[in-house]
Image (tube, rainbow, N blue to C red; front, side, top):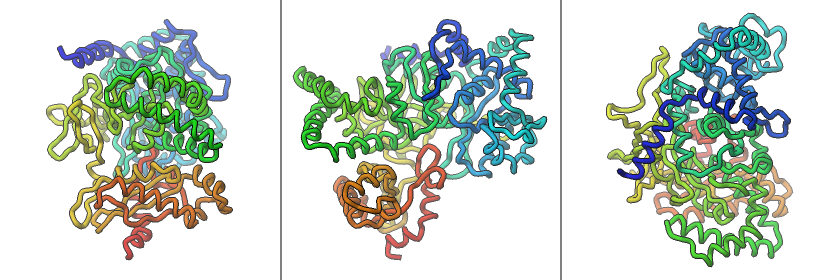
Length: 612
């Protein structure tokens, strides 16, 4: 039997009969006093026994206010313990929680609430309620609104209750019939939904992806089988819980491994959180890794020559060993000794400043990351390994592992997963991580696969002889120039973003004679760079037209062009005077480019790049 099949069979057997409530029961029984959930900077750690006790009370309270098995509950709340608690409380009823991004428009919120038929809405406080109030008349299925804090007493009606009330009625119900909670969760089957995740959608209406207990637990089992991270390991949760990565790494995987999650409510405090926790594993979207690399580069740029020279020597040794391992070759003892010395004297202090000093596995996904950034971080002694997948594949469908990886690829298929290419290069996947389907407006679930079980992902790629997958682009985002050339914007944008000064870039050229680019400066690195170069106006609007900085950006464009074929090269560019954020609309909540929005919003600038 193929070893991969054996591992897949083992993973399937392990995950077969498990549910999230069953795992939480195990944790509260076998690991009762171990820490489960903490908020960064607060003395609020809950053990597994304490966490389950609160979940039991809230579960009973949600049932009392009208949340039914199979019913949907929407959550709009920041990352805080109550988010985890109410989510898991709903799951223990056999209900389906869904976190919504706070950046959604009123129309998008209406769509999600109507489409899901939400029975209960859990909001952080008065500000969130004010956003929802105009659309409440459009939600006939909504039974209760739960406010976590900050509510005006005038808002506390029969339909709107504080979370404290849900907790108190649930506590009373639990005391009256403590076995009701146990009966409810024991009826839940692995194939039932555990969550509903709405894709952020770069175009069109969001799709409601239904994930089962079996989906998320199989993903946790696979991660344990492929990456050797200690049991009960600490981790940092900083992404929105509407993001599949945080759902897996901040909720389901820690429950499976009985880990200790530290919530970082403010993503700007991520590095201090990493320093405080020292996690063994960490997943960062590409922008996180790019900013880390840019920060180290900015620090080195102002360091003493002796410091820069020492880093160059240490980095060269670490990078040489990394490239040998990426090629599947052994690292010679002499080189291993040099790397160990470099780690101890030069690299470990830098890793510690980033909180990456205990890292066993560092992952990147959700969008392409420039290879130059991966190489720089490898030279820092941090191997960032790309993964690939989507919400529909419960996160990762392919993964690079510490013992088998290839730079520039997103790894090989997870155990039990199959990956192949359609005739046009589109990536197709099949296996136990593929979601149950898309929720329909009538409550039924539409399959996402064809008759043979294959999911068409919309990504385009190539697979090498060893099974490593490389993503070349999104099928719908390929640029076709007026001369008929098919060009990947992601490759161009990745090369541009490799420069620390460039925060975002979008390649333009569909039905145009050549490629141009809109460039956004990094709002942290650019001001520091400007001050170091004696520029008095270090704010983004002024820097966008600063000749010295523009010359540096032009050099970055030239460096990118040197790695591109002639039709791919950027012929003209413009540096924009403001940042792009999910709030400003150019990025999705997961920091992907909203290309249609960008092209429409900056049409005048784009026309200028083509002399129109």
